[in-house]
Each structure stands twice: as C-alpha cells, then as structure tokens.
Image (cartoon, rainbow, N blue to C red; front, side, top):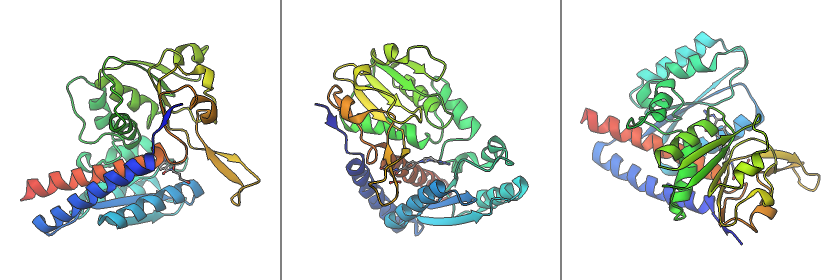
Length: 294
Ligand SMILES: Nc1nc(=O)c2c([nH]1)NC[C@@H]1CN(c3ccc(C(=O)N[C@@H](CCC(=O)O)C(=O)O)cc3)C=[N+]21
C-alpha cells in the first residue's frame, strides 16, 4: 500500500512558516507582502480558485488587491490594469487568473506583467529561463513547484530517477518536466498523441499526471513503488453529492494506491499546495523588494 501524501497537511505546515516570515518582515520593514489577483468574467471554477487565494492571503497576513473585471473587458483595458499594478509599490505579486476570455490574447497580457512580480511564473522570459541550464527564473510556476515540494517533503529523491510527465500544457506539464530535468531526473513527456502511454508510464519511478483526463491512469500502469503526483482536478457527475459532482484526479486512486510507493489524493493533494506556492512566491517577491529598497 502506498503512503498517501497529505497535501493539505504539508500546505498547512508551509503556510505557518510563511505567516511567521510575514510577521518578521512586517516588524523589520513596517510593510507586508501584497498580492494582486485579477479575474476576468465569472466562470464558476475561476471564482472558486480566486476565492481560495484571497482567503489564504488574509490568513497569512498578506494584503490582497482584488481586481474583478467584466467578461467583455477589452485587452487594452486589462493591460492598463496590469500596468497600474506593476507601478503600485504595495503590490509584490500579480496573478491573472486563467483561462482568459477568447477575445483576449493570453500571451500578450502575461508578457506585460513585470518580471519581478510574476508570481505565477508564466511570463515567457521566466519560462525561457526555466528551460535553460544554469539559469534561474525569478519565480517557479506554482503547480510544478508544488509537485517538487511534495516529493522532497515526502523524502522522494529525484536525481537519477526516471520521471514521466503526462500532459504538456504551458502551465503544468511542460514546466513540471523542465523542473524535473533541472533536478537531474531522466524525463519523458507523454501526451495525447503518444501511442501506448501505459508502456512508458510503467517505467517511471516518478509520475506527474497532468492530462486533465479523469482516472485515465490505471493501477496496472504504475511501476510498483513509484511516486505518483496527481495534478488532475476533474469534476465528474455524482448525484449522491449535494453539489451534484465530485473531484477526481487523472489517476485511478483506488487501484494505483495499491501499487505505488507514494501517491497524492484529489482533492487534498497538489491543489492546496499550488495555492501555498503562490503565497510563497509572493513572500519571496516582497522580500527581494524590501531588501533592495532598504
Ligand atoms: N493564473 C493562474 N494561476 C493558477 O495557479 C491557476 C490558474 N490561473 N487557473 C486555474 C488553475 C487551477 N488551479 C488550482 C488551484 C487550487 C486548487 C485546489 O486547491 N484544489 C482543491 C480542491 C478545491 C475544491 O474542492 O474545489 C484540492 O485539490 O484539494 C485546484 C486548482 C490554479 N490554477
């Protein structure tokens, strides 16, 4: 039976560490870290994620700046908001919740975020640095950073291991594979056009599942003893729930947990850690800013 990695508990531990550092900064400089969370439109999932982020800020003593824009906002008005936040000295991190409405060019908006406030790590330059040897981006993208942190806090070493990332999205699969590579794993990415992904996944000591396909990874696909990090957050219909749905990962947890050495659950695995890494990035950004101006 696998050790189930309790993402909520690890996140809580890190959150108390962050809260402690926020108190220390506030004593030393008389200022607290600030995070701007920008949301466009009213997608229910985005509203819920943004709500979690703002609530977590409040709990840790980080000041949150809430920018809520209508679905029809123009690209140039959104960029104006980003420029305002870039210029605001009380804001140390800027997050533009994705996905954006179709009429807005996502890459263009993300490129306007000041590099030293890019707490999502989505600025093309930060991603470029992530892809290069011996270059360090100012911020690591939150979900990939959450995956690595969960492995290291569970005592799973990465160096020399075979890692397979399932999915190649800009926000998870691709940066996660780059981070694993930086940590000296031998990395393979499998995706929707890979024939027989199971035969490749079976060779992995570390699996990061980020395909967005409910329970696609079966227990028989997992190498015995492997570490399985499940990034999937898929809502599936469940009439027994008051909400009418429940969240499942990309991994068939019931099967895989019998084979794996470590596994993260959904919910309660990577999700709470993603938000925590955002807060951690905000703290880092604020620290760099306070030290520079001191
Ligand atoms: N600019 C930007 N940055 C992001 O980091 C970003 C984004 N856009 N767009 C959407 C994705 C998704 N995402 C999640 C965050 C927390 C949970 C999370 O905490 N999930 C809980 C469950 C929450 C529930 O019950 O609904 C859990 O897994 O336990 C999940 C998903 C961040 N994203």
